[in-house]
Length: 496
Image (cartoon, rainbow, N blue to C red; front, side, top):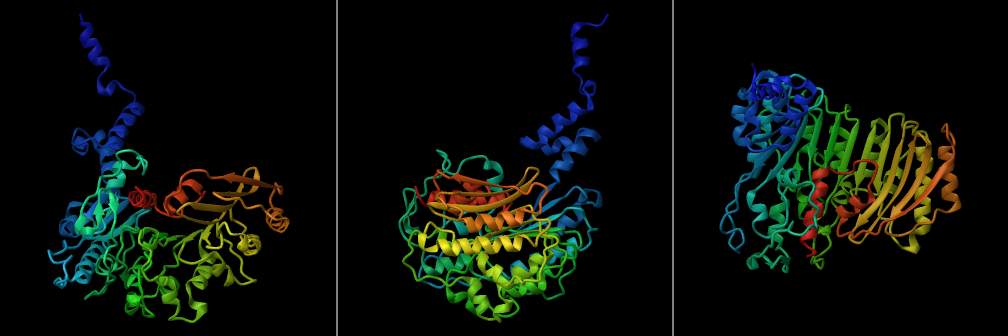
């Protein structure tokens, strides 16, 4: 006769559970990622299928492991990989980096170029994938050990602390290093120019052999944690045959000393016009700038880097013109801080029609709580409504601006109930009759032609442009989530 314990053991055996329950348990194990969870894939075929799928979904690579990578990852496991984070780690600073003595030069360009070439050589053997993202990052472990102690070099911390509020108690480590300008958690001295130049120094890509074509990658991500600019970025873009999405978050050069690297082949306007693959349907560009974090703004003002580039070209080849023309073939476009919306609109031709565009998000410095700019804001909104009427598939249009202590967004949405216009911000903007009429005309061709008008006030504390994005709750992506988290944390550390 069976005992009660044996009956209970049988009832609670793994295989006695429904397949759906077993799958839920395994997925929970994969999501929680407790130490050693990946080794459980060796228990049986069922566990291997679920856990390996989660374990290989997103992998991190360093230059030192590329030789083994192509042999370790079998063709079957390649199909499980959907996101590759490639981190090029530069040598740590020398002991003389903070002294007046000149530090010995490090061949950064050769390190980065060699790593990228080896990675592309490996990926060139992969068959095309449905969804494979490549994220590239370059940093030195010393970047956050001297003057810039509050910056994040990678998204590792984000993954483990994504839900933590930037200003939550205990979320900030007390920073204290008088030699590098930090006293009891506060930055009391500005970093010297040499430290800024080292952090934002451009990297010249040079390849001894032809860079291989890569057919497997469909998404390219370069986050703002990659502070050094890539000179020769167009060489990479040319090699992606099936690229569909690019998220690019460059930094504005701090000062004019970067000018020597700006030539016709490396200007971003040239890259976007010539090197961006025609297969790209989604483009997100977010320009960060040290001016957002500089607590000592008495330095000489830097010239925006897009102006430096545009000085080299005919105005019709500048960033405003390039983004305008590129938008004709895109489904989703978001450009933040790099160029103003009015500059893009200026180059939109009367005969153009955007048959593919579904969402468009742009920034404009006109959007400020300044009565002297109200007429210009009205003209900008009316101009936008005229262009939107030529975008038959558009469901989301956003004009926004944000920074410390201010945020605002003009949002046009089309949903099942019809069209709506929302003003959301820390300050009030009354829609003039002319603005309402122009957007009513844009909505008149919809099945539900009535235009709903909304006013929403933001009352939260805004310490940075990151907080502005967070509080605005924009209906489309303008920045990588991990980058937004980093911006809010870095800015918060400067206001303690």
